Length: 126
Image 1 (cartoon, helix red, strand yellow):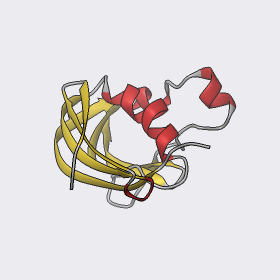
Image 2: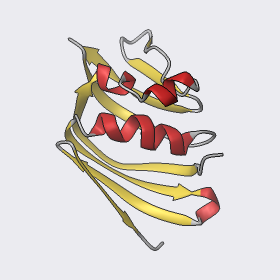
Image 3: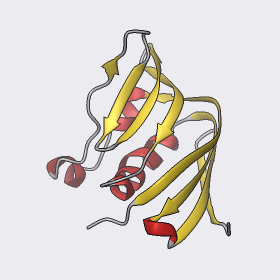
């Protein structure tokens, strides 16, 4: 059983882009166990939504590059999706992301910052 994120609060997304393929380059073990993102769903306005269980990544897709507009990684399986799929993909990203994550009923709260592929995390107090 994974440790899950109860609340994901995006504080800033600034020109965050990544190769779409980075979200699908997962470990053989995760893939075998069925932990993989769904195929991008194209919305009426041309945007895309990529579901990861209860979690979602939204944005626009052009020439294999995803321009991310929203991220919500929370709920069932979110710990696995964050560690095994999103963080490795973010290491191939450009741009900035800042998010605050509340884990399992507030047991832990941390800030994740991404800048041009460098992912850092720090525990914070509310």
